[in-house]
Length: 446
Ligand SMILES: Cc1ncc(COP(=O)(O)O)c(C=O)c1O
Image (cartoon, rainbow, N blue to C red; front, side, top):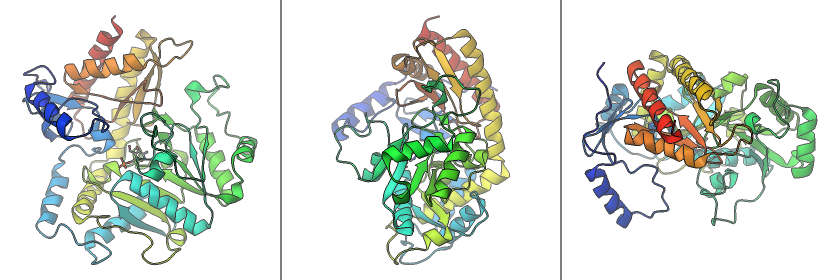
């Protein structure tokens, strides 16, 4: 296969720079701009920018394109729906794709219990709604969340989010009745290296923690990303998850799994909860659900979701027909192309390369992640583990110069994460990893 990356100008080229100059006059700089790239077209894992440069995309618009950019089946489904109607508002008139999608999500999410699903437009909105359901159903107010968590940018999503800068600074006051507890970040665990068992996975640990934070009887829900996303791709240890679920059950606390980034095959299972045999009471999904169209789902036990008054939940656009049609096609692709299994293959290749580089570069402190949700954490010194944020940014910049779009992550900004479409061709993946290695070498300087 011929090389995919084809650079006709430096990146960013003149057309990208021209759009950037217009953007700077029209859009506030507070909306972050991770790269200066302006894209003309996208196909599977390949971007073509306004200057005609071809690049490889390892970011998928932050984990939205597990089924690839412009997946043919998704594009066709949206075109077909465009020819029927684009909007009705589900609360006003029903349409088949909304109900069918709810049925399918109820069937594929963890647990065989009776479920209900409704839709919103973004991950943050789904998180807001999950908390509404949990509070209404339990009659309790407190919500417990984790350090390193990211749950979105609405006032509730932001309040549940852990990273102060840039997500929270200057935006307070935040939503009350939120309690934050440590996430098991094994690489940075204060209690030192473990033998694979989590030192937080003990009942007494949770008892002590809640004793000093919040009375369990007043907690409506605990919200957790099974593998932290924005916070640095940190998978929860299995025994921790087991202990947490048992604690929650004993106290009548609902478990909300935020699978917005981990969902739909990314971790090598359809949902990351499956790695833990975890059946959450509520699961929120978005991102790769609709292959690039804005859609989020809130799925929960029927007996919880049915509590409350008619009209308490909903919204003008939630479950937009185009987005539902796209999502139905995404689910077909997931099944027909075995994307979760592909997540394992893609992840194994990435991990093998990262581990090989780690042997050469002590700056790579940790390599981790479930299935195809893999990351490396960069440190100045493997002994002190001081985060190497600057080096991380430099690697991403060197990669972009060479035609590879890479995303960073982490509470300390020192993680490089890969969210390449799971449909990526093997040769494209290898080419991208080769560029990543060159970028690493250039950034480290040896
Ligand atoms: C785990 C998680 N939850 C919630 C969100 C918020 O989703 P959205 O940006 O669609 O509001 C994100 C987005 O990155 C996420 O990764």
